[in-house]
Amino acid sequence: MHYRFPPARIIATLSGAGGAVGYFALHFDWVILAGWWPILVVAALVVLSVSYLAWDLTAASRHAHAMAKFANVNKWQFEFETGEYRRVFQSFPFNHGMKPRDVNCIRGTFNGRRCSTFTHEYEIGTRRDENKPNRKERWQITAVELEYPLQTIDILPDDVLAKSAKFIGGQDIDFESADFNAKWRVMGRNLKYCHDIVHPRMMERLLRSDADGLAIRIEGKYVLCWQWNRRGPADLARRLGVLTSVAKLIPTFVLREFEYEHKKYEEARRKREENAPDWATTPYALTSGKYTGIGAEDYVDEEGDPKPRPEDDEERAW
Image 1 (cartoon, helix red, strand yellow):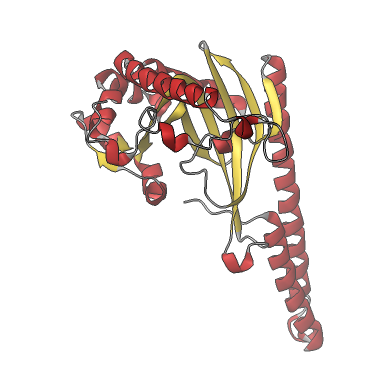
Image 2 (cartoon, rainbow, N blue to C red; image 1 turned 180 degrees about the vertical axis):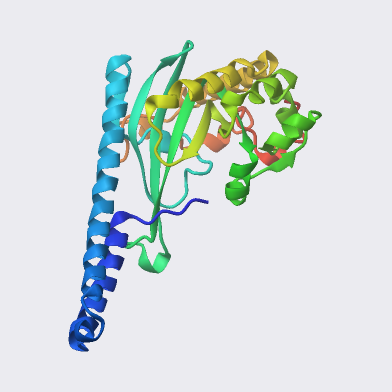
């Protein structure tokens, strides 16, 4: 995992160290004994810390400007901050750390599919010191939409797997291609489903050089990749080219089966809402006028689940 201390903490640490050196240098007459080098060291530390802060702020500003400019030129949408994707994605690097934010988000169309890219950032700290996190991490998320929600599967290069395996569930699955197994690791909970998704044509596509280093995931209605730190639009076409190819290579029978489950779920939800009692939908103090989901257990036998639970995997023939 990559670790990165926030600028504020770096400046505070360097300033504290510099102040201590300066105090002892003057109090114990170190200047007379050792010359002016302790004072010069303190000055250098302050200059370096301030320079780092300026560099970090400038990098953030340049990244936002580059994303907004790309969106404007290509008639995409730019949003400085969005909360949409934190409700959609549950796997790492989401649901990790404190104070998560999705910033510098752009949305548009590529190869006929809706897509987006944004920076997901969060702070890492301890329960005893949550107001002073010891580092901040940023990940660039690039996503392409699918027709229907699918079960989660991770296709990871070895370097990413080594750094984040403890955050990713599922078993490591081997395939018949030695070249593919040497370059990629597939993590999933349903063995048959993983083999259905990662078929020979999919493996052939992922062995091309443009897919190198991309951590790819299918989750819900998206095929996405996640990379450490901010990424600008310079290589966005490469990322989207790989992701749209993966989306197009998902077998039709897999999409058809999940389409059936999704429609079954939506139909059960519609029926439940139509039969909701008046007190559950009347827009008074306790409701917003929309069905709240109370009584859903009465329909549990009629509702399908487009994202089956792991314990159901052996019973379902995906």
